[in-house]
Length: 249
Image 1 (cartoon, rainbow, N blue to C red):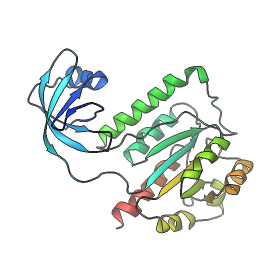
Image 2 (image 1 turned 30 degrees about the horizontal axis):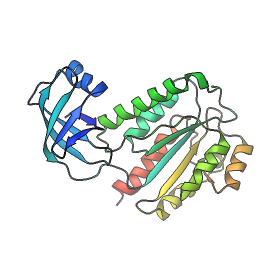
Image 3 (image 1 turned 30 degrees about the vertical axis):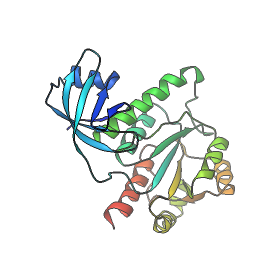
Image 4 (image 1 turned 90 degrees about the vertical axis):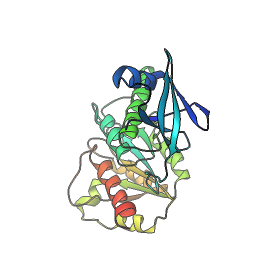
């Protein structure tokens, strides 16, 4: 059943769908009155709805049944990725959303080959946000992770003050065989806690960047004995979080 994140609710028993979602329902899926969809409110509440009316500008859907349960990770995970080349960040956003990331913050690292073009910022972030929305619909999330504009390392440190736990995926730790920090951190975390997880671009973070982050409360950790690509590491970490909080318990 198709899932749509809705901003406008006519009343407690009816949704109004317009814009891109209207186009998807009518032009792509070619749905008709009587068919059912799932509508999700900004607060995460979702309902199975039946299409009651389709006009030239909107779809009207009536609530059949409000859903119970929560598909979200029980902890808040922000993925901070050093700007990578090509479409790797899009992959991180798409798959990271499927795996339960709560938010994404790209940042400009010393070894980021890609330079952020402020003139194209709005369109780029809009595309990233669309990717997150579509992935959230596909994976039946009740939350669309916001994707922020890229920030500097210093701005990232300011953001980190809102998080209880702060980790850095650092390949030098993996080379040294470090294997306990991530598991120990997850063991300490409780439902509702927040974790900011930093991942470097191709080439990793510099020792200066890691030192600066550590000075501001971050802890470096390895992700197993193998060196992972910049687009693989966040997905490994999110899978570990999901296993610990959703499958192990």
